[in-house]
Length: 150
Image (cartoon, rainbow, N blue to C red; front, side, top):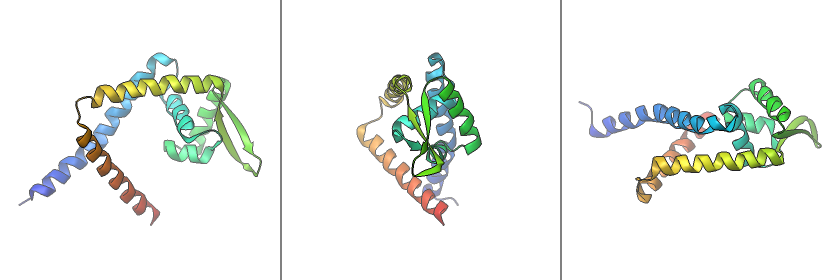
């Protein structure tokens, strides 16, 4: 016989991937009217969140993409005047990415759209429930990171 705890754990685990996919799709829809692809929008937001002169390898890791696919995105963003790519003066093998003024303005607009999405999706979730959900997600994230490091 399955315990109530095991049933709850199973139900929780089964919701994670579909929920993450639905959240990403909603965010992608929010970007549609921005004349920017979802992958470009996500990359811009991450550059903005990670800060100027982010290492290209760190950005690829944050986006969970290969270096090769990120290079194509960065080339497109550079051509559109959204980012600049610079060599690291301390290590010429390292590329650093920074937002241009145009890119920074676009990220501000994208982040506002994401804030509206979060507000719409979470408006009826209590502060305590949201804090608990965040706590559980952070604990799971820490465990997965620890497992990955082994």
